[in-house]
Length: 152
Image (cartoon, rainbow, N blue to C red; front, side, top):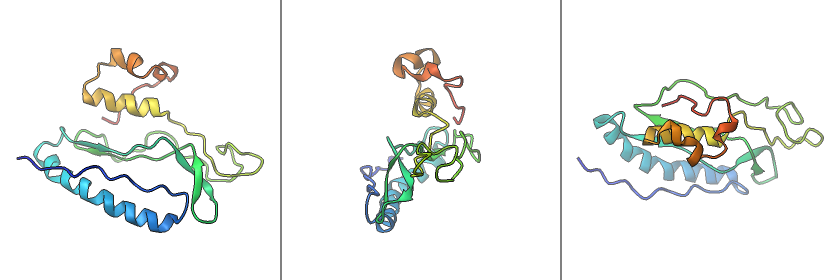
């Protein structure tokens, strides 16, 4: 059965007008994810959906949204996913706290506990990259004691 997937929706930036943009982005994301559901039922371990972004958002607002930050939370969905678990560590949500990079002025720019290299290296193994080649594909992954997070 061939179910066409719509072109992936670009989700909005949240610098300004954040609440309206989140609502619009959720609607735009629903269609592509909805198209994956029938495929996932037919081939549960052959469909994987994941979120990614090259930056996070600060906890401290800027009056209309939030500014660029570091840490992020991502979702991975599919039959091959070892779900109902959190990988990494949630930050202490305290301005100027132990996980805030701005300990003097408290912007809430959290230091991530898990590297994007680890996240993508784990996804790459699901896509078929041999674990012996992960260092070539992701040159920084060797800096981490756990290059494969084990969520798939």
